[in-house]
Length: 81
Image (tube, rainbow, N blue to C red; front, side, top):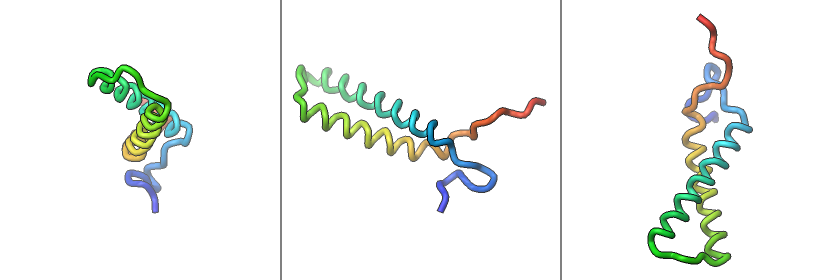
């Protein structure tokens, strides 16, 4: 079964693009979570808390990427008119 938005007329995105998108979104989510924690009054984060934050950000970034990647336009050169 193919991902939504893919098919014979719409190929899937390259793996390198999906990987970079996932890494970037995970980093953005981790940064936002750290800012939210700081604004809520958390001054220090121990090692276990940091690992939990990274795992949560990675899972959220991967989920968002799985939802977003099939909806991106295909990569390639646009035909010149």
